[in-house]
Length: 31
Image (cartoon, rainbow, N blue to C red):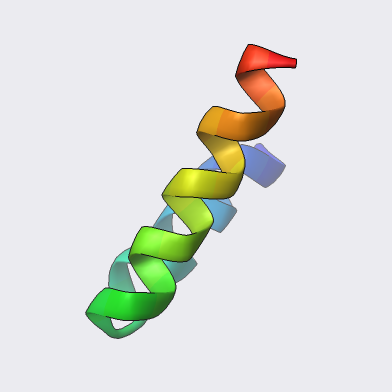
């Protein structure tokens, strides 16, 4: 549920912020 809300919030954010979040997500997944 939290991840779904987070995705919705990210979609509403500007491009640069969206890219930053996706990069962080990939970073944590690869850890």
